[in-house]
Amino acid sequence: ATLYAQQLIDPLDRFLMWTDELQVGAASMARLLGVANVPDDREATPARPSGELLEASDVRYAYRPGRDVLHGVSLTIQPGERLAMVGPSGAGKSTLGRLLAGIHGPRTGSVAVGGVPLVDLPLDDLRGHVALVTQEHHVFKGSVRDNLLIARPDASDQAVLKALEAVDALDWVLGLPSGLEAEVGSGGIAVSPAQAQQLALARLVLADPHTLVLDEATSLIDPRAARHLERSLAAVLEGRTVIAIAHRLYTAHDADRVAVVEDGRITELGPHEELVEEGGSYAALWSSWHGTPTTTPS
Ligand code: ATP
Image (cartoon, rainbow, N blue to C red; front, side):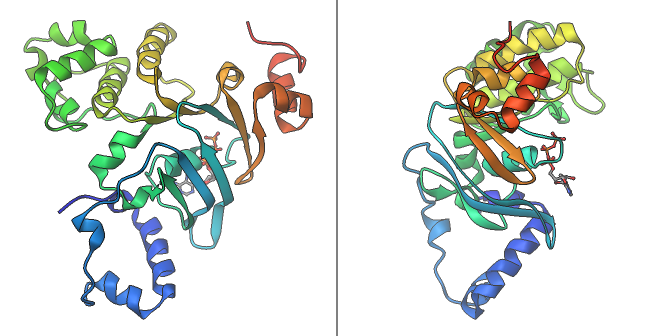
């Protein structure tokens, strides 16, 4: 059976979605329980997004029943756009990022790519449209090759090597005792956090998503490794739509638009200069980070 994004959703989220569905009525319930004789068109012919426009419409989301952390967020991201999300800690940026990447499904509202809700996309299809990049990456027990093929099981060795090269990881991988066959993950050869991040980035290159949601971490990696990784990351971002949850101001300054998230809502949205001129939360944040509202980062 095809694995759907919906099946990735954490159990509580799924429960909330179910209860939403159940409220729709007995027909939906029968369908959910599999007792109605309703053909599942979705299974037969998965919907195909037309284009890469990513659109969140009136999205609400709760980790716990009755405690929404997103209160009706609408946001349209154009193909090729670079959008930065900024805002206070706990405002909901990471949550929104995970929804835009199809990791969680909204409680109500929708997140769709090319008109198709992410939760309706088979996982293999979803991965080609949008993916989340964080610094919490897992090296799975298995060979280096296995670790990359998770992204695209049918990828050739040539494609795997090219992906490793793109993220600057080819040299150290080929330097391992058995190269692509080297066993990593628990019980295998230890890889550094930076190397693990590179394997995760190489996986992304293989999956080749149109859009990346980048949850920039306050780094776990030492500064020298971080500078090296910047280059790997830049190579992966090249040519893609990027939604960056910005913890560093230059990310926001360089973006096409900035979305300010406060208390589960988008309160300001526009290009950096416009928001600075408006003199709202972003302008205040900018001046607190950079001295005066008109200063540009060096
Ligand atoms: P930060 O900048 O600190 O990362 P953020 O803007 O990304 O914050 P989120 O991490 O999205 O904010 O958190 C939004 C709200 O949801 C917060 O109140 C947070 O405590 C809550 N929250 C986040 N993750 C979970 C979770 N897994 N379970 C329950 N509540 C959560």
